[in-house]
Length: 324
Image 1 (cartoon, rainbow, N blue to C red):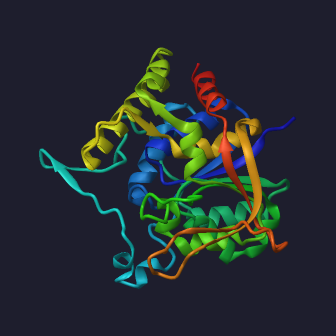
Image 2: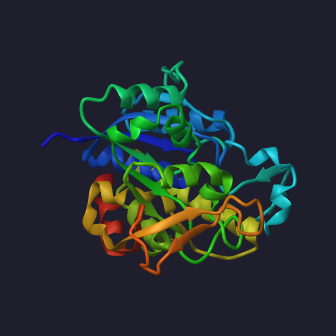
């Protein structure tokens, strides 16, 4: 059976890197391109990190620079003040501490990004596709929404869009909004309500399947190879920075984006999935960016496959297996 072709759209920080590595090493899919989008980091930092991780895996995947900001949310200057947005900033020894590492401690490859814009690449590739292509979208959905606006018919050549975004009951950027959806709510609304099949992995199933303690990280360290060493340093740094930012003493972190790609490797990692009506709040008010799910089963226009529960043991074993 031929491998599924995948466009990997990301804002590559700590968890995106693990997701990308797992997909490459799984050999279950053929990642035909990495398209970069604003989000965890600036667009140029995302491009550099994508180049470094692709090179680490000896993958040499074409990388495209995409949108550097959201579709419209920044047009309303006071929009952020309407929500209880997380605005934690700290400085240690003159260095600004961020949740995600700006630049991975990896060498840059000799090759560089492609000249074409990511959205143009997505449109042209899907319009000319002989077979349907999957999309993994684990950052803000700006690139995917823009491509769907440019040419809505590309949805016909998309098999499934696997999205990490939203929260079933909570947020993390605000009390109600998860970061990817908050960073571009209009894009999220466009993608969820396109003609394409969407599988959505919100915060809660990610935390169920992809929370890693120090003990879990030690199991990865025991594999003792260059890629596992990078992941160990990556996750330990992630925990350390979060502890500094949030004044905690945690010994774990969640690799959110890794959970979202698991169905591509092994669909049985999903314990519960429902076909629901889902929208994203774009009001600019207190609920801005919130995933809104209608669970009343009163209507038939269900548009999104939403993951509710995932298998932690399978998720952890898959990562260990691919890293071996």
